Image (tube, rainbow, N blue to C red; front, side, top):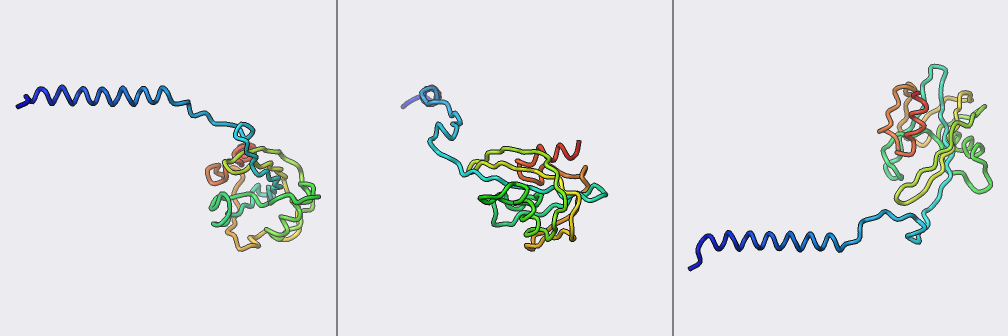
Amino acid sequence: MLSPCFFVIYSAHCIYSENRIDSDARIRQKPDVKKTEKEKGVTLKHLTIAVGIIRNPQHEIFITQRNAASHMAGFWEFPGGKVEAGETPEQALKRELGEETGIVPLAVQPLKIVEHTFDDRRVTLHFFLVEAWQGEPYGREGQPMRWVSQHALREEEFPPANAGIIALLKA
């Protein structure tokens, strides 16, 4: 019959051996390094987006909520959309604001260009300030919308690519 002491020593040896094996295996593994698109041999889809910061005289910003079936679903966003072939970002902005919000921008001012990479795509966002327009903006595609005080914008309610522009608007 084996003494209880044997089981304690044997168990400790097994635990030590398992840890040593796990430890050795971790040492042999290559570090998990995030590779660039070029290193992976993958080209991400690249989108150029025109975005309108519609601001009224009370310094409220018009925002809409992204559709549940879209990329970054549920986040709030500044209206806008993809720049189509043959369009400038300003032309795309005017077209998109008409389609999404029902307004006709009368004057747009380039504000900032932001590059952002998601896991599945790269985007170049052309932000424009829109302070003069015809019509009353609304969620023309049925999307929820609201006016928010410029200083009350909350970065966490927007896609990550909007963080810099929100900081700029709140400064």
